[in-house]
Length: 405
Image 1 (cartoon, helix red, strand yellow):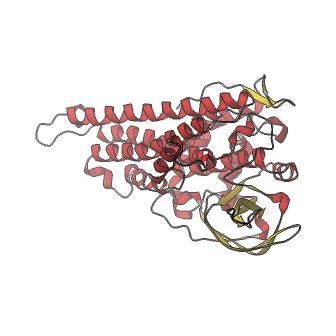
Image 2 (cartoon, rainbow, N blue to C red; image 1 turned 90 degrees about the vertical axis):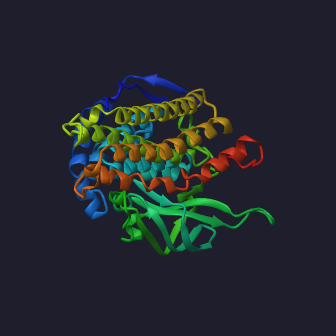
């Protein structure tokens, strides 16, 4: 997959954005991307068996700036746009779905910290060239609120990339500001050295993401290392401020992963069919009309899903470049496009698998692994079928809590 030439951006003091010359760092990343993708493809089985990306490989991703694609230059980031972020992450996901998911998830979390964390924590986090945050919205924790912060005991599940993180944690519910109001949901993060990773992640697919449980044992988190989520309050300049509020931003990770998965599956199906013939007619299976119809229909579906994501993200990014927040309608479109990319991406993988014939079931084959990988993110809270209900209720004015999108 070719990655287009890109320009960089930097926020101005007025909160708008200006174009600057292409940085050598993004040139370095684009030059390194084919080799990173090739290594991810070659080592995907290793990552699956270890249930994490290998440390030497994650170091390469960090040095290349993969996790700082959406971060502007003032935090030593690469300043990419949302559509450009999508394209680069699809390349990695096409090579290895776990690599794509971890890279996308890390980039999204970094973007949220830059957009909505207090400057004190933002500076602390990005001072580390290898900064990577992992957090989860599945808390099993008890908290004690203090004047200077909170103490947390318990754990979170599904902390993707936690084995390579510098900060970990997750969502916690704080006491309401007033009687009768709901609890306040915030993300609370602490250095990895203060936490413990319990290696619980043993899934049917995406095993290489290392999405283990993270445990806190009476860990103190000062207030400046917390920030509202998913309601989100932007404290940075635009366009990065456009990343909040809402889970639509997280949904991009799943969409990029499944678009890469689907692209790989279609290509692998054709490779699997080349040289095969029908046992009765001896005609090449790749020439069979039913095969061509199913694969070409899947190609059209993939193209439409990718186009929808590109359009939705471009519209949000343009809003950010104008110094304006993303409207509820723009966020609905992005969330729906992402959910559709995930759900239909899984469908495309299944079509490619079925078209490939009996050899696709080989344990050592690629297509059976792609089938397993594609069966996971369809359940993710940001891209499952329930997401359509949430977007529909907001679109129709039934639900006014648009930050849930």
